Length: 357
Ligand code: 9MR
Image (cartoon, rainbow, N blue to C red; front, side, top):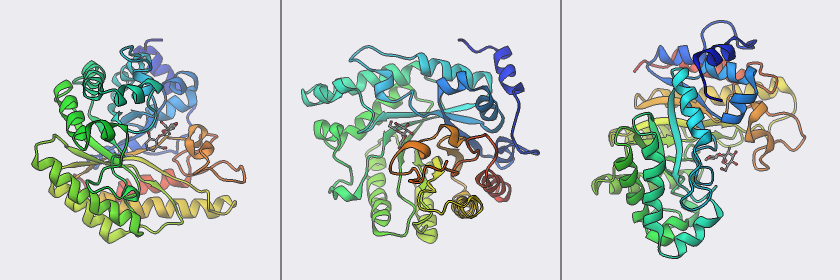
């Protein structure tokens, strides 16, 4: 179904469970920020109450799946753009910006890709894919996650890059090749590296921050067009945030001229007690603590949660983040019944208290 102004308005008219007062979108806009969420084209089409909340609160969306390799090039040279085309249309009708995710990652790749990378075609395959996918939406996209989760200190790689298929085939230069192809295909999109597990006090997070402070200057010095850094922020209440080192890290990124987006904020309540009030207090406190630190940095221009409601979220299903007692998770702005959570209120309040930019 193509989206028209009429269907867009019908969605917005569906019963809203949203809190009275200003939406997250409006609160963010007042500070020169974009608030938004990861979304699914299928769910936007089939769940009108969810779609109405997205239309209300989001000024920016990112497809959770639709722009990944397995979705866009399921067979070599055969591209599939139905989901993404629909989503770009949806964003245009609702006046939303779009982030697209992603162009080079070690996960959610189609089965044919490993063989193609191993058989010496890697550079052609990468260039062809990036030019077809990023080229199709050129001029319409605010930001592309070009390389997703390229660094992982647990692999202890001298070049700070995790050894995925792209690196095995092309060496560390796969990052250069991906960014060059993305820039050629869509010179207007901001090109990002996006990564997780950067915010804690533990040695792994510290090593990862240090790794990026080595890697990024090297990339920039050789002219790789990295323009943004995405902080995934899949937070865990049992791990302590490294407030000061994290602030310093963000300052360093800003000092390199990078735009920063919070790209995938959510909180796993897996280790919290069952009691809803206790859980909500912990989730709200952590969301607020994290956002207060991050929003103090003026290079941060967008905050996206990885989903708007736990009705549709990996927090409910993925074994590494879901609760073991089967209770529905609460670490997103709306619960499974689309009622605003304590996290909605924490995000709203953090936006209200953020310095303008
Ligand atoms: O939430 C996404 C899940 O539905 C997919 O199955 C999975 C594999 O594509 O990716 C999940 O999203 C991930 C994102 O793309 C990158 N950062 C971590 C996210 C959660 O695993």
